[in-house]
Image (cartoon, rainbow, N blue to C red; front, side, top):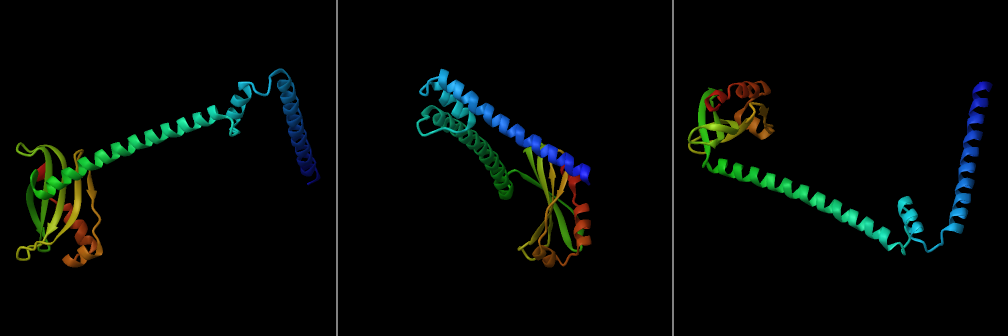
Length: 193
């Protein structure tokens, strides 16, 4: 234990000596530089800017910071605008699909009295080519009301993404988790490939 405390003590002493030496060296360097470089020289403004210690008189340094902040703001704005454009395109596609303009529907088998339907959105719906996205629902015919529960989404690359079903949807169809999984597996994806 004495050996450890001896080395810790030496390390602390060495650290303190290093800090004192660096501080003294910095003060000496400042004094020498201040003697050869006048106080109003632009060097001092640049040095304060580089150290992040501008004064109110360092207009150039503050302007650089303002310009950098404005540039960051423009980059963030451009990214947000790109995100908004992408979301707008996705929203318009979803609205067209919801209106039934471009969506092609196919019915599949029934599960516990609920019909499984896939609606697909194609880049060319007449030729059924270029699948963009497809959705699978479970629908129950109740005299024109047709309540539905979304089950899954198929992406253009073929990935099938399960959609969350809330407790109200599960209760409406009186389904268990096993019924939900079975219905997802019965979605007629092959009819819209």
